[in-house]
Length: 88
Image (cartoon, rainbow, N blue to C red; front, side, top):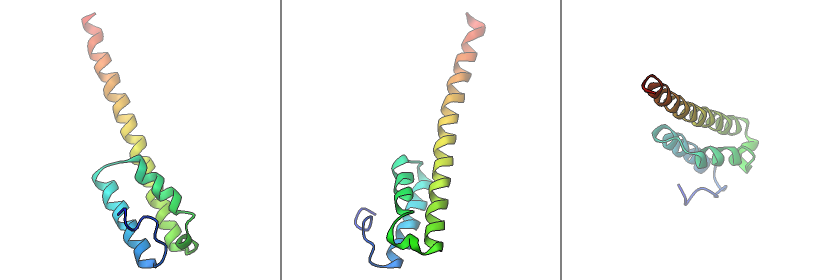
């Protein structure tokens, strides 16, 4: 992925990068992947509405995953705290 990250020569390369980012987000929620999608929303190939829409979808989905991961951590922490309260 690093080799094609900043290449804007071919549409197929951009679409391959989109697929790689989607696959990586499906495996592991990472802020750098969301940021990459956000940056590519204003890239050269995003002048094509389909490409821009896909980057936008990737960025939004990634942000939802990040937010839900954060909420899960907060909920788990709150549950651990609540479990301790009866034993005070």
